[in-house]
Length: 323
Image (tube, rainbow, N blue to C red; front, side, top):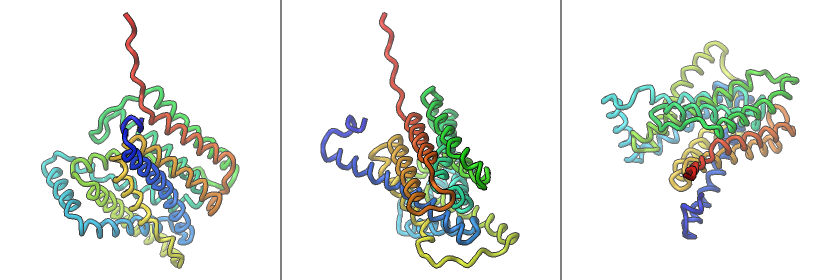
């Protein structure tokens, strides 16, 4: 597929670089899971950990926006579209999905481990993405549910069962699995909404900054309420790398924005999933948090990757029957 699109060696080389960079971006997704999971554990407060991560990413993007005329023009264009009612206001709320993901990282990634967390989020994302495609959610192009896509989604669900059943015999609460699954569903819907916002604004930076702005605002509200009820968190840890979750998020989003034009949405999604799940397994083996990684976790990762691959592969056009 890629070979047909890129015929000269120079173009193939750039495509290969883009693929490697996107896989690394997927590893960075797992890295953010790992960082925010431990930060939530150290603070004993997933809400504050999520706000620190998302808020620091928002500050980075605001600094970039300050020196980007194209990004600011994107915001002005989007504002005009909303006032003219060509863009519904609810389409601006995609950042709530990202906020829920980061909050779930701080609350449960340190309990279930990075690999199982990744399996659950990717499964939710696959299911909601398939539904969003089938319904034309947020004005997107309708893509019907095919047998191939249904098989892929079923494999990801089986992967969650494989990952979860052994944990039910331990003290891991079922809610710790359900929350990242719901967060993954939110991310799938967020991608559809953000794609529409990016199109209307003409600026990936404007769409991304809006995403972080909405998510940060939501996390400020829920964290203030949480702290008013539960009190202040533990003393912040001194390890500086635990505060890099927001920066890591800004980096992997930037990589996606750059490489999607070279490799397309299909290959982008597969590379991100491959990097995320491979990175998650490595983190659970080398720098574990939560429950230990077992053979069933590795099987669940393989099933998830297979399911996403099957669901994402393009359909072959049917041949006309001979007369």
